[in-house]
Image (tube, rainbow, N blue to C red; front, side, top):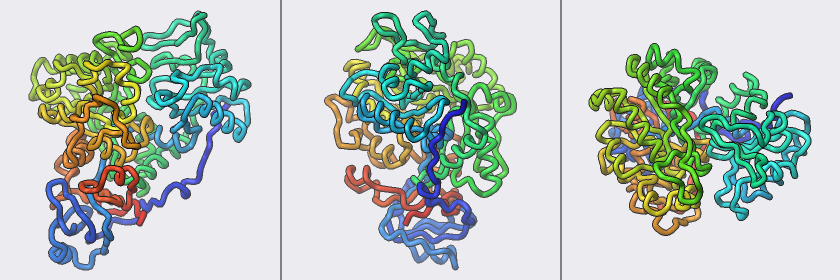
Length: 547
């Protein structure tokens, strides 16, 4: 059996110019925000900013440079996604995508149509559904999937990556029955009669995933290339890849060696592939575009599937969520990382999950907060925080790696999951910044779209893309535009130990530049939501030109 992959022509998706060589550039003709001020022009020489200021002086700084007239578009320090899953982004372009599915019936129709276009007997895989907007107000079930495809196994992942739904054929293939016991850190949802509904949460997903043949090496390599090209076309100049494998890093390095990697990638390895970085510490390839920073682990699950670990039961269901990795396992990795200098990133969404991670970090350093701050360990998501724990990020020097787009999607279900009091500590970017913590912004793509404009919009406006925000949705946690810019530029630079090189457009800094069709600092929010990337420059090389 093999997984059927829907392939689309890369050329139809992208206008990437990653093979173009770096050259001296003069950039002018639109608003240019350096992260500290606004200037008329940038002079780029040898891949770095040579001058930022009046256009006449910039022209003199790089005689003979290629002239780039922005024609009113706005330039910014390079936007970096501080939390994404690179291969997942690529595979989303190559497989059955359920992003934007509007209902159970829409999911059934999409699955049925895809199956008709891709006949066979092998398993069907897809991802991207999320039920929180659906009129049915429920998870999909195996019976729903059976209506579309009953003669071959089907497994469809929820957008957050923490739950899947399988059809009856897939459950049978995996041997999942009413008597199957869920593994630690997982749930098998069952109907009132005790039969599996098809929904598997967190660690229980492994019961069926092992029955889906892995993609080929060629497909994995293609997914990495599609992911980086797509990101360049959206205006990102880099990403922090969470849960990388050694194989994926190898594909990145091969692209970089052949001048085909358009953006920078900082890798945080999965625990299974972290032995080298945990023993030898961070490393980078000869181009400097591909770096291995440390290891990424999971403490708990996701809020939408009720796997986030909470201090008290969910407001809309029994239970307090799931712990995905035993504390002793995490402590062992932290000990190795402290010895090698590897950077730690731990997924924590619920208030209990976050507290456990902060406790583990503090204990790993024996209360030496100066050393912990220097290590730049990170909490990925930091989504729901107890009032007692919010100031600990600043006190301990722990970086909060957060995704603004989660808030504008989760607003439809988070109030029900958490209740009004706990909601006050959710998606608390402004409170964290005010406390003195470092916050690095990302998208968590392919959980979210992976668009820097959406992330900026969400951080500064905190309404969904149609302009809606529910009552008591914490609009006081929205950021100023300058804060939102720093969230996606300076924050990720610091989080990856690159603040001397990235995050600002000043003399001597890397010439990583994101250019968008509107000025994010002045445009009405509805215009930002509809804007697009115009150009992406990495180390002085134009890697995407959509003018």
